[in-house]
Image (spheres, rainbow, N blue to C red):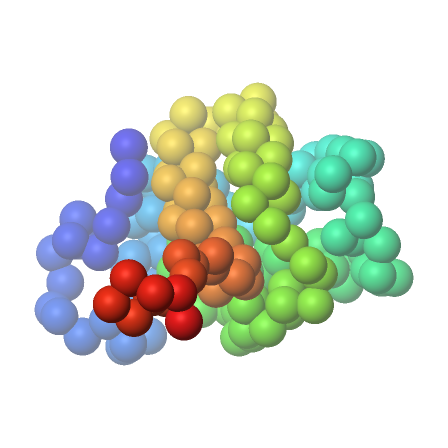
Length: 157
């Protein structure tokens, strides 16, 4: 089950504190997620990612894991529960890591496995749907496209 803005019966003013609180309340009720559940899930997921041969090198530069977990919990709270607690730039934060398609594919597999094992079914479906969108967006933004060679009237440029 994927919960969206259209599932609420509030005025179309998404930036009001009241609307955000109502959306968050509705999402918590529908998914079984809250910050404590998300944090426990993220600790399990990133613990596994840090042991993964392909993904581990991306985390080598993280020196303060408690601060990192707090930050990514804010991110996922904002993404999954619309709390608005995260104010950052994920694309910029990942730009220096040299990630490619294989990294995103492995990240998603591990994320989905951990979500299915650790979250209520509705919560797992909800974060997995968002994770797929985030991974696709990051992959498109961070992975250079290989374009075909340009030709002019059949002659390579």
